[in-house]
Image (cartoon, rainbow, N blue to C red; front, side):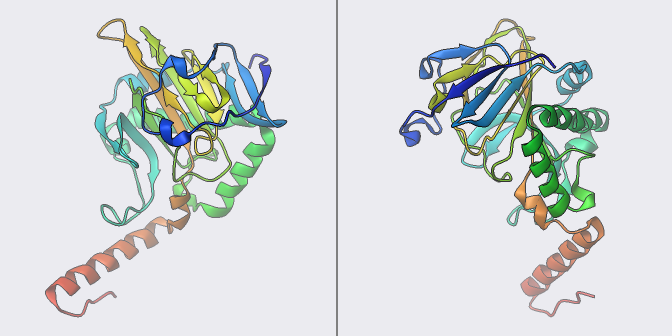
Length: 276
């Protein structure tokens, strides 16, 4: 991995409510950074932008050969994306922990994407070994073996396709650790990551990785100009969900949801459930 420059930054005092859920534009920052760098806030490493030495082409191909869906994330954020890894319980929709549907619909591509978590974790360890160790230890202590992604600290992830995401804070992740975002770009201009509190934008080169705490730093993506019908911008974000801490071992998770469903059906029918 190439050496990175150091930037010492201080957050501007902004009305964050005025930014949240609006589109990012290049006028929101004064400095656009293209080179690998590490940002320090009050002497503490806040994020790191790197160009890894790993071969990322298999990961790019996997992203290009899956089907995406358009939906709304928590908070109403519209995305064209697919999730991967593990999903926690969602009481109203799917009250059990599970692997995502990508593993069933595109098993080969899913395998490549999930295995790449190890590479993302390895580079995370290089740029911030102390935070990586904390993150890994938290996963080891709180996530069951059935819900871990290989040797990485992450539990889950999302692939965004041509998404100029509005300003937002991530939600549901472990607190005070980093996510790793791999970016691929072909035939586009724009699509920069805007961090208005630090008054900077990041170009996010093709085959780059950005590590930062998306829950603690406001971020959004500037407009993407596609130069042809084949133009693509993918961002693959690897993160760790606190909801996975509640997941039981797989067999126990299956027993649990069967019991809950039996109890619900029995209640509707006005009878006593047999939960044995």
